[in-house]
Length: 196
Ligand code: ITT
Image 1 (spheres, helix red, strand yellow):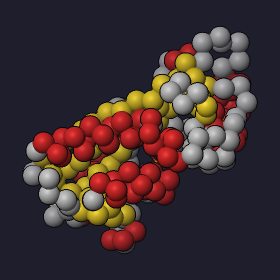
Image 2 (image 1 turned 180 degrees about the horizontal axis):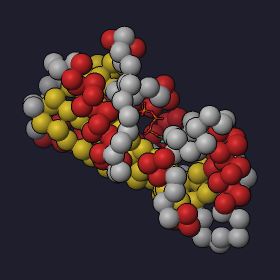
Image 3 (image 1 turned 135 degrees about the vertical axis):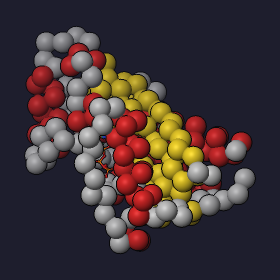
Image 4 (image 1 turned 90 degrees about the horizontal axis):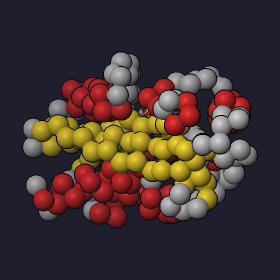
């Protein structure tokens, strides 16, 4: 496999960190938008993770037509809330700090015995041999009644991972990366690159 530069089209520094941690050991040069002094100023008008992921990757690839660009759209889907916040995970109570969002979600789930939830990520890769590719990953678990841990970002402290048997907020970065939605989607992508 030929090792290449991948530009990660995200404005979320936590995502950037996770991609660096996961892709660098595989020999990729992982670049951020900061390094190119560009911003991801694009509206996420799609109705699925896949559409929004492609919107972000295409937007940056127009600015950097010679680079392989990776973007992801991701979110938390809660069964009892019919998949909410889903694609709205970043926009839900957007101007409020995460502890308030956790509290509101926990409140909305009061009375439900089934607090099943999953994180989903769809990674898009564009400009790879003139192709557009998408890969999906999911992490399964449930929403806890009391946030636990301070690691990770976003909804990690309220998401109990079935695989780790603890919240992503308590898990180390390595533990989270071993089972996360993002790492599962990324593994599919890396597998594809190895074979193509
Ligand atoms: P970019 O669009 O710039 O990449 P974003 O944070 O706005 O950054 P999304 O639109 O994909 O990205 O929204 C993802 C949101 O879903 C994110 O802001 C978190 O609230 C939540 N989320 C996604 N992955 C997560 C994870 O691994 N742990 C906790 N929360 C996560």
